Image (cartoon, rainbow, N blue to C red; front, top):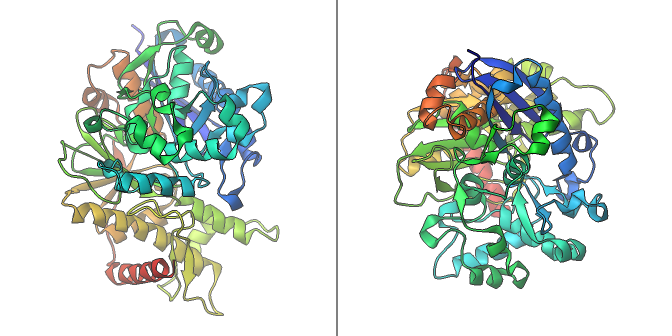
Amino acid sequence: MAKELLIGLDFGSDSVRALLIDSCGKQIAESVAAYPRWQSGLYSNAGECRFRQHPLDYLECMEQVIKAVLEHGDPACVRGIGVDTTSSTLCAVGSDGIPLSLTEEFKDDPDAMFVLWKDHTAISEADRINEIAWNSPCDYTLYSGGNYSCEWFWSKVLHILRVNEKVRAKAFSFVEHCDWITALLAGSKVKNSRCAAGHKALWHASWGGLPPEEFFTSVDPLLAGFRERIGSETFTADTPVGTISQEWASRLGLPADVVIAAGAIDCHVGAVGAGIVPGEMVKVLGTSTCDIIVMPTIERCIPGICGQVDGSVVPGYTGLEAGQSAFGDIYAWFRRFLEWSGAKVSLFDLEKEAAALPESSVMALDWMNGRRTPDSNPLLQGAVFGLTLGSTPPMVYRALVEATVFGTRAIFERFKEQGLEIKSIKATGGIAKKSPFVMQYCADALNMPVAIVNSDQTCALGASMFGAVASGVYPDLRTAQTAMESGCGKVYTPQKNCDERYGRYLQYARSVENIG
């Protein structure tokens, strides 16, 4: 009898990947496709912190990668598809649920496209949301770390409504990327992701879902009506959205009974793919980072993180998220900086040279894209200290790596300060697999072993696990994890004490914050 197959779809910042895997955890095939319009630099402006993506990038690349993996397995054996995306990545849609940028009128309008998670154009809108929330009878930021971010759903919705009259006139609602893709594949109405709504859109069961209408109209009358049209019902990622639509079954060559699972945020799903259990931190290391923990019900709010949401990671547990707005993006920026004259620079060579250096006077702060956690502040900026006429690119690169891992330690320390016991750490993502230098520095900075998850596509693996549960291949997520997770390979153990250097990092951090 043929084995049951699952597909995990992982929409990252730069590309989408598909994983075809059997129900016993054997990887059959994987495929990755870079978004062509995004790669060409269309619709975005890094200098303005504006990052937009065209939905055609998602659709074209999704079709490409699914067809590619199905060449290596029997499509008739596919039972379920799970989906994760970056978040909060959202788009204005018409009354038909179609993104405005897929219509002729708005095909080239960045404000009608998906606003990527790292877009920081909505700072003033986030400030307004915080002002109203902090002065309301109920502080609706309590479960979002006490501070609403410009990276999140309602900030971006309000910004688009404020700055683009044409989009405002046609926008019936707004939809998260993960919710749009799952509804599209199933040909159904949108089912709001518990994960995305809880961490990014102020959803919490204690106040009946989304905050009341009067809260939103107090923030700005332009938000009137959107609460109702978006809806307050949410679904964990093990919930079926429906079976695949006739259109997409035909386009992809899949049977009509393939189940589409509800969507979720990529890093949360990556933690599931890593086999997360209570007392364990999973670090997803890529262009940015996310640090995920699951715990039994927590009766108090943890300040300065990116939310705590029932069922956002593992159903039945509270999921807690923290992270950094830039990690690998900082290394990529430094390479571009050095390549300004046209010379090609290898990060591998930089790391090799940096690893051989002793500690120096050069230090840095990792806030190139603001600070997400602990204690969100998108206005903070990165810095490099201690430069001399003898400073070299490898010395600066080493300082940037040190800054990113010290940013990780600041998050780790916040969880510890709040009494959340972290017994073990797993790491996944491109940097975890490719950079021994960075990962050794992480183990040193955290003073704990860091185990590297074997799978190269942990987010897609986690998505396939949710697909397995939604389709009935497994009765619950833990059973699916036990059967399908890849385990860990390399373990980095602490080799040096970083306390003195970390103390200096904190001194520099305080001085920059005081300037601001």
